[in-house]
Image (cartoon, rainbow, N blue to C red; front, side, top):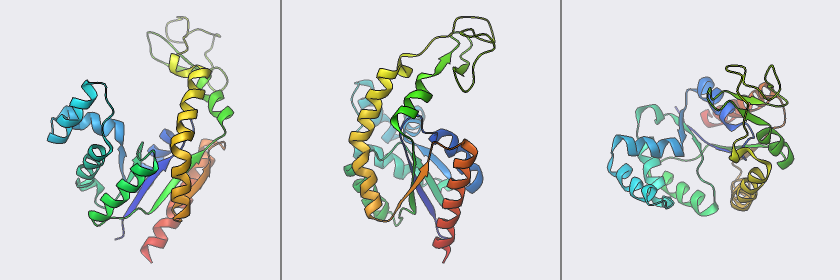
Length: 224
């Protein structure tokens, strides 16, 4: 059976996490979130995890070659043999080229790249509207999921807070970095006929239907 090897791209707040969970359920793919994967490798004390830990402890970025090595190690797992969904890597063209070369060296190829996109102002609106209960950890949204009493946690009545990462100016800086790094990567995959754009401004259910239909089509084409 042909593999279904996918990359999930999109800005923070576009809904990748929600859709990733549904893709895993629909297609039984191994989900590889690079941040989680690195932390797992470190926790398990693998040789690659130990090497990654030395960079992380020093506050340095983990080199691309090491991240790819950890990804390939993860792809040898039984649940990833028939396909995977990679989230959080690559972020730049050099990373994309290096990942593609490493996959080909392992006898594997990308099936497609799913790009869940939304305008910057929509992203800022979504993220900056989040509020959190400081003790309970419950997350609200001033528009989409407000508390029963404005500004108060439903659980314990404490004043809700806005995390620093959710402030509009911080979100815009993250988006600037995302666009600088990822816009060229989007064109890179589009030129190779691998990119599939998904409108992230639609409802989560509508986005899910679009994603599922796109992947189903890719699966049919791979089976031919």
